[in-house]
Figure (cartoon, each protein chain N blue to C red):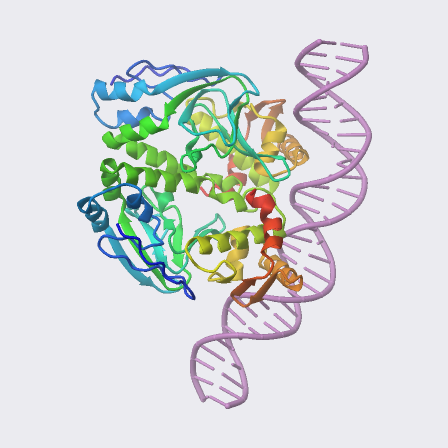
Length: 250
Length: 250
DNA sequence: CGTATGGTTGACCCCGCTCAATTGGTGTGG
DNA sequence: CCACACCAATTGAGCGGGGTCAACCATACG
């Protein structure tokens, strides 16, 4: 498999499309075949179960809680928010998924989606039929290992929510994580567009929207951030890292 | 495979031992072979990679953060606590594992254990070499599916910690979950022994030990619980369910 | 323009944390 | 068998971070 020329990624985070024998470069599954020396027929098997779907528009639901599960999906472009409605009917944000990340992994064991997924902007997806993928994984050790890795990785992901951290620490950790995830996919680590509303961030971090507002204001006053509406620039990453340190432990 | 006579389980939660062709009845893997009609040679393959280890005594470590990962383990008897040390060196309890539950699943993708595991009382384990298990899963779709299920199941497990719930709700949810997990394995749902210290419960729920104490006291005064040291009796399950309702959404 | 929606700012209050003292159960040595 | 120490658990007093409620502001859209 050939190395693809590194695309200069600016502006809207959108992954390149790949072709019949190459996955999108940011795709979570691209490494599954790179690591092993599979011939083209096997790769074709893997690609044949990939279905490009979308675009979804802001507010469109990708799946809803209780829907029968049959596929996981990698985000190609845009941001997906997952959430549930608690006993009182209030929304509880579970996570945000950026390009290259995989949604639906927590639906496997119940055969139904345990949460809702909604597009926060224009979203493109790669759907993978999970039964077919599992079958294929039986023949491709590399793919099986990759699936185990993806699943295992997600188990410890709730660290920002767990632990009783201060509002400052939570928000700092949230921003640092966003920054890292963007950087991993080749986007800027310092300038980013927050595709989610303040209320979503607050809800995700289990804070009041007012608190998020106040903390952002203070960080801006201290020259750590520059926030204009949904555009954010990180001016002093080291201050954020220091704050996030307690949450992220690194 | 024959149905085993249902053992009357009282007192100490300890799983029966199984034999060469039968898993311990409470084991998380017992269903992996029951569902499919595997012949005995395949079952022998599965059993041959099971290694009974223990006993571990109270305070013994089963693995430590950073240890190289090579095996997952099902708890046969006793309780295992997992925890990490945060940036300030303070302990952060991640979870408690009862007989029949599996530890080590979150270590797969890093190839190192991301947390510590310690025995809270006398603990017996079944170790499964993970590389061997993964290989075998390639030939046994039922086993592969079971592993996917176990992993998927664990992704959403942090619900008691996520969400900003009151101390009452958190503690009630904790007790209800413990009760259910004991009941699932055939132990009493109403009388249980708390193998973990108050400080561990508090730490796990992200509350101060004093708060746990006070809530338990109030629940006892209201006749919901009877607590004597580490022995707990649930007198009004419906009150606990009502409190836990917001956390567990059911 | 007027209206709607999301975001910001201010005033007040409550839940749960902190600090400190006390109890009680358990183990140990004389 | 008792005296003592040690640690977990409990109880009380006081306080502060962040939630709640309310008003205000700004941008987007008809």
